Amino acid sequence: PEKRDTESILTLVDLAGSERQSKTEASGQQLDESKNINRSLLMLGRALNSFSDGSNKTHVPLRESKLTRLLSECFGGNARTWMLACVSPSGFNYSETMSTLEYAQSAKAIINKAKVNSIQQRLELKELREQHQKLTQLYNTEKENAHAMQAQ
Image (cartoon, rainbow, N blue to C red; front, side, top):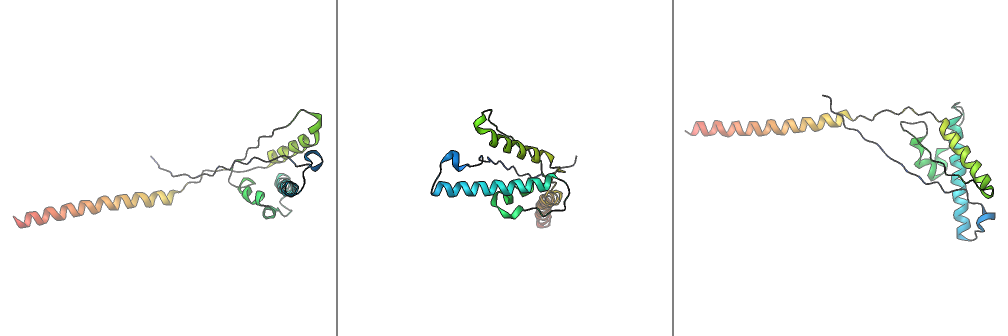
């Protein structure tokens, strides 16, 4: 039977909703944090749109925010990507709900070709080291037996 050693990375991200200043009435440091959240969500939206259109003609802005850099493996790479979209039925949150659904639609359009990351060489090296250790022990045992026989 073939032995395989596999590795994987699980990335869980809770994307905060768009921070609308008119709704939250944020000011000061809270307003600055809201601006950063909105900037990251904007960059994520651009990256999702770039990957979901499938044209590969446009530059994909993955390095423009920490969020897109963290999620870069999820876009068109060797990954499986799921998106859970939480929406509100309230008319008060209509624009946020529609924005969330647009993100989800873009994420759904991304096609990834995930495959198992087999680390065959590392496993073979581990097996060779174990085999070397066993052979060294066997050699030392036989060497001691030979010395014992010569002494008799």
